Image 1 (cartoon, helix red, strand yellow):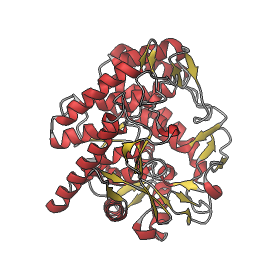
Image 2 (tube, rainbow, N blue to C red; image 1 turned 90 degrees about the vertical axis):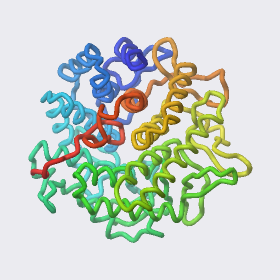
Image 3 (cartoon, helix red, strand yellow; image 1 turned 120 degrees about the horizontal axis):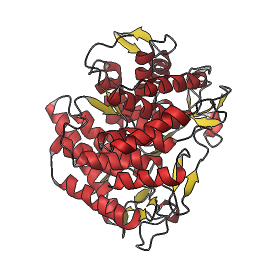
Image 4 (cartoon, rainbow, N blue to C red; image 1 turned 45 degrees about the horizontal axis):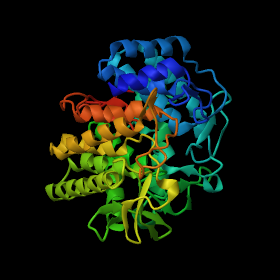
Length: 456
């Protein structure tokens, strides 16, 4: 019902724009997608499909067939276009078998390739989809590329290379058909020296060395780690290099970044050149689910340790929700000067319909069947209905610590792609998009696990 409400209002007031502004009842285009339109359509397709909202799915599909234009000019985020557009199109193709989604994904994939034309092959973060020119984000220090951006291409690019049979995307490597672009990123990362075994967030696409030593499991770093374990799972556990990189990275994180607060809450701190910053972003709350997913494989003692860690982190993120007046969590929360799991800065008190906490609830539910995760998820459903539902859609709120919310007038596309999908899956049977057969990209778009040998 929430999904139908979010979609119907988008379709009515903003179809073809990237997001709905539910208070002003109009569309928002934004500057992340470089002239591409319909981000909410592409992000919502697979969710509409698995929820069996057939009429709504057909409306979305028709828009893709008739109105989705790839001949655009403008500066796009390589990362956002990959995870939302390519991910959404690929997932919908695999779920439905409809060729239109495959051909759009491949056509768009081609447009992203020029971003890799750098001295190291590490792509730049921004690309003009028309001219193929690429450059680094203005805010990224010294023209660097960002770990979570160039490290979150692997799942989608493997599928693109497999579907296209295109040698530009694909080459045979160790019986896996691995795209040279993403394999080269791995080569650069395995060569470069890692401080304490950690991966900093900024790397120069020119020299292939770190630009500054900021490490985070939240924004800027997050999905790099997620894609290591998921690459291994997607390869049907053949991509042992990805598994080893994940295991080593997680070990370094456990050793240097996992902390316990005075009140007994486990959290993952950020690391700035050796100095710990005792804060955790909402984005980092996906890590409970990731660690649980990665814990299923390996020696029993480690499995147990990782499942405990996953449950503790998920519980800490749950605390960030329960300690607010709206029962929704802030963008970031801190553990210092007497505050625990709460946002101490005004600039971190907002909630923009993010999915990471319910994502972890979904994984922990599926992997433990502890009913508390469903209870926690239901609390989120009720809080969303109470504080984020407005007359024409759902909106983020500017301060989770007051029950007279100020809405931000934005229904993010990831609310339909991720937040509502993970909540739905939390209450579904385990065989709906089973974790045995599907891996979710970082925008919650399901990609099939390759149970046969990869073919180029």
